[in-house]
Length: 166
Image (cartoon, rainbow, N blue to C red):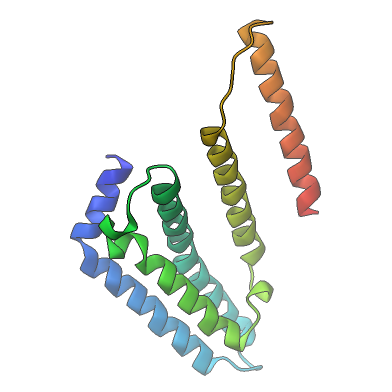
């Protein structure tokens, strides 16, 4: 099964996807209605689950859309609304709805989600820059030298990433 097969499955079984996102919207509205200062400790885990349930597909759909526009140069008029736009729209709506009642940054697990977004964004930007760049090959060393330079660059990026998160 390829990723394109998965996207085609989402397009053919669109009613399940629509029901999923409608259920999440209804649950997020219900959470904002029932949450108060007395029960916030119990409801915040449900709110965190809702954010994860909507943000993971939304983030993936966002980067899939960016990939389609920037790498494949496909017109966005030719893509499916259910696969490309519905998760993003629902993610924004749920984040706005839940942020009215409680700050999303105070929910458990949100720092991991924001770190996921940052990691995917940095990887996407690096891939885009590499795809747009021209690399001439200068043969001064062997493949092991090239591999050693790559490992050094990855260690520097890892060190910078841990400093960034602290």
